Image (cartoon, rainbow, N blue to C red; front, side):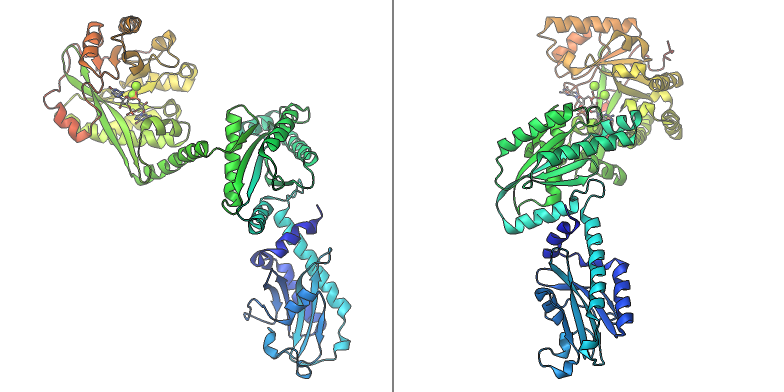
Length: 596
Ligand code: C2E
Ligand code: MG
Ligand code: MG
């Protein structure tokens, strides 16, 4: 693409006068013109469809306004210079057609692009009339060419990618607006080509260095240059993403086949292998109904969905996009909820000791009511927050709130215990344990007053830091519970190696255990195994007394579930506990678990 190609659509549409005016070079050009021609005022204007903007001036001060009817507009429209030696000697123009006060002498030349298109005007004005013939028009035209050159640089820098020389995102946005103006309500297609996923960027940078990555990107860009003919428009919308606008009327299936074939080739090619895995997202849309930034976002979402499905091309799906947007919104607004302490609260679900019927522990469960989306279940938001840094602030919030409640509870129920769910990421965080102990200390609570529930995962066993923290916590007297035991990665090594006091059997184990003899057998033997290893066993999700009776018969220590109480507020918990609180016989709350 020749540089001025980028300038043309810009000049015909919205001239970003503010951007152009930012450039000090134009100030120098008008100042130079004033000096060379000894005139009181000079101006440089740039034209849009129907208006022109003063980009720079000398001697006009603040008297700037868009000029719609002045001779400068005629200069641009006719692409011809106008020279008036003395305004008083002619009848065509009046003095208020001019920006400069009391203009008598005026000369203006058009700014002409290399293809002959006039984009603006460089004008001189002075209160003193002079001989029109004495003006050196060639010199004035030279200065105008200088201004054109500067405009080109300005615009090109703004709309051309400096590395690939493809039009950039700004140009994509302008072109979509242009297409929408010319073909409103017509179906069209936009494609985003995501050259390399972030994890691959990191791996390549580490293994092969940035030059390798750059070269792979150039190879992909070139492959698309070859693929697309003049009717396709290709853009570099970010360092690792291209956009493609197929010609109007392109058949979606045809495009899909074309991209699939091309991407299969590219992804297998020696030139890109290991360094780039290209995925494309296609968005069919209606011109004028979706703006360009949103199109890029939608196409990018389709490309990510394709990647996740191990495919190379994806077509935008509003359902998946809505789900993705919801997930994004959840993470975004959870940060605000934490910061402003809004919509978050804890509920507590009591656990009953089956043999004695006494209650002395409850699990803290986080609840969140989003201002717009309403209540969101922890089953939905915790897995989204867990991989982010917000998990630290989340657990801190839960910890502080639960310990405040616990300190109050203990005034009435002296040995009450609260179980708090924590993520393995928390255990990996430096200073987590010290902060936890300090928080307990500040409220005069012993470490034995809380139980930390961690969800099993084989990785925990191999994580030196997590294991060290767990052992240190257990050593300090904090109770450890293995949550959701029986799902995911349960292994005997897990039971053996973790310094746990409590094992919480997962609901999936418990539900249906009455009808399913195998399940029943599994629960019974798991309970004995846990007891052999010195753990207390809590069954989760106990919804009926029938199941509770079976669990009791199987030797289960405690149960938790809707059959006894749903999660309730701390105030309700106090009332609820009043007739039910008490430590079971042989209660092991204070038994220290020694590290193996
Ligand atoms: P979890 O730790 O296994 O918590 C038990 C879940 O089972 C709770 O769901 C509870 O409301 C539910 N439940 C209790 N009894 C019954 C029952 O009889 N039947 C059925 N169907 N469900 C029952 P909830 O509160 O929705 O929490 C879901 C998960 O979210 C929790 O599972 C836990 O992994 C996580 N979570 C909740 N609060 C926190 C928190 O403060 N921090 C962290 N890191 N995770 C939390
Ligand atoms: Mg739990
Ligand atoms: Mg659980």
